[in-house]
Length: 212
Ligand code: URA
Image (cartoon, rainbow, N blue to C red):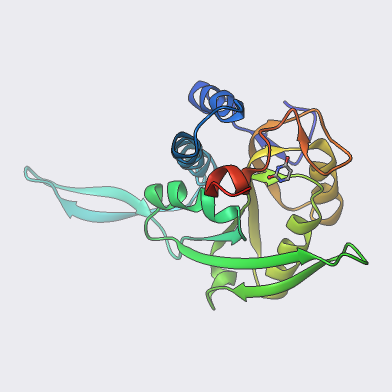
């Protein structure tokens, strides 16, 4: 129990250990990127925990058996550009057959409303579990806008995965999309006046891509 009914806190010791390493300010870009991939893979493991199975007949080297495989159309990861791309690789290592969608949003400087500049999704998004990925759930406005857009495009089952969340972002998603569960390694203390998660890990996009 973590105090938020829409949050699944992934408290596996490996996830928590790697998250601590990610938070350290002197972590070099190469190590930061590798750690993000490793945590993303473990988050993908949790977000797919209840995928439906069906059974098939197979032959082992010794005998025939019925064995479980994933049933039907599987999932689509949807990356919120640009930082979302940094956590896609680890997830695709675990689920290489997943489809991948992208959504690009920027914040209008006058109205502060998120504006879409790019969208590419598979046509059959409505038949897949859509897993929206962005390393940081900060204000929650981009995530809420991206999820609204996915719903417009036909997505019916949506989950959100991030490394870190701010309580403010969790509340915004709960208000706009109470049906969407958030899988995260931590809900940190707060959002600061510059929109950074505290204590956080800094700017995830800059740290992933070595920009600044
Ligand atoms: N985006 C980031 O990359 N870091 C934050 O702390 C908040 C939003």
